[in-house]
Length: 145
Image (cartoon, rainbow, N blue to C red; front, top):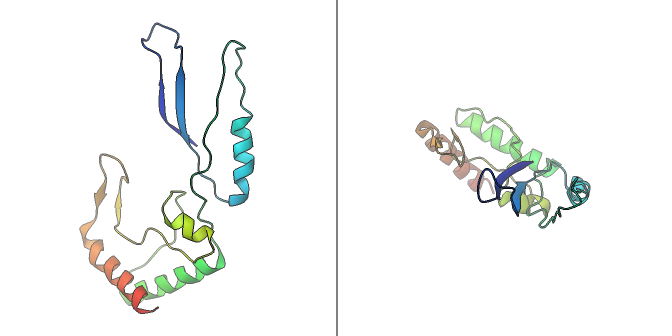
């Protein structure tokens, strides 16, 4: 859970008339969605003079690790080894369009592209020497279809 955007008030020494927070929540299993939604919607204000309104909900399903995706990863790992590099498996809890295909039961891998750090941050960068091997891996996977 990350309350990434928080806003409210007009000055530091004045009680805010309104405040808001945009909260990003990631879940590992689709079955957790109802429980997490219920927890948020069950929040109550301690001060009876305040009101709390919860809106929104899950905007993308989790990318769960399922047998088809495991098999696809093993194929990618084997091809990477043939190309001379190691492909590690990882789970980040991030969100991509791949979350939607995985939720449909389509074996899906994400994160096969550029290697770097600082995703979506000011210091985001790409390690150039990984671009050619990763591109070759993608080409080998497509050629294997």
